[in-house]
Image (tube, rainbow, N blue to C red; front, side, top):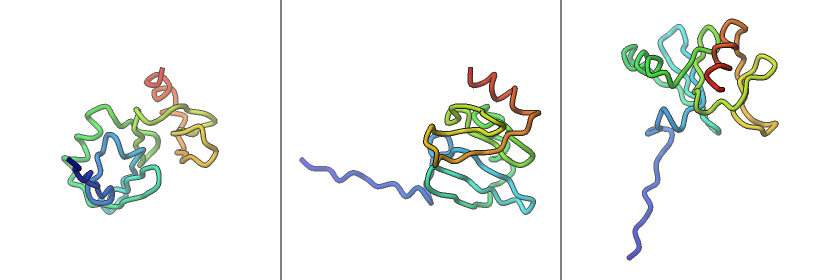
Length: 106
């Protein structure tokens, strides 16, 4: 019996904890979610955004950016690294938040 594997459209139905590396919050209330190969801008209610932050899965990296702690592998030279590949996405981490993020990684 062959069952067709259901394809999931990441742009419409992404899972915040597994698909998203980090997100940035703009002044206009839009949230820009960043995955490995894509960026998605969506309007997110403040209650939902606060629940992402309160869950402890996302930690503040700088003024308007939150990184997924499960996806960060290292904090080097003021940047959060998500992969050892030289082409990987990097996110600047303020000096204020570097020690906290490093303590969560260890």
